[in-house]
Length: 115
Length: 115
Image: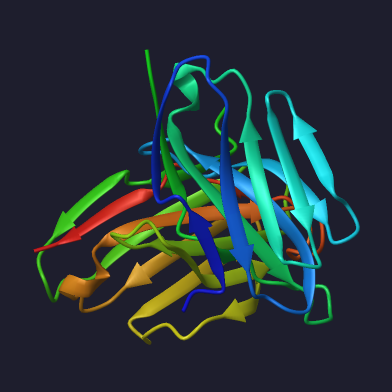
């Protein structure tokens, strides 16, 4: 079982609507959690970074929340645009000590925004 | 200017061949990474170099050999290619060693197809 699970696997919404993507993780100890956006045929791009002490972080129409107690995070997209169509990947960085930490990726949620 | 670039973008080759993928970053970062994204879109780290020193080496077959001639370049050489090597390979870089809030910047990816 993957240490970072995302839901739903895919989602179709109409332009202008809001949506929320979910991420559950079992990584422990935990350092920080990130959301990435990956357009088709491109590399992932960082949207938000939250440390374990942060509850929410916004980046334009993207708002990420984190509940470190329940090990859950969500990414809320407001007033969706066609350009939001992409894969959204939840990434957890464990805190194993030291300065080098590996990113643990979820399998992503594929979002399609339709006109 | 492209921050993290990879060549080639597409690579189609026969089983048993040897091939290389090149990566360059012009961000002045100290750390570079190679990731493999399989058909299920799952990203997994393979290697990481900091100032030309190998700091992360996941369980990757010996057929994969990274080479870092300087901190701006990290090339990936693959010997005796197998069908299972078919995937998209992403290069990334970051200022630090992947610590708490160290952001990784990804290249556009190289789609490798082994026939």
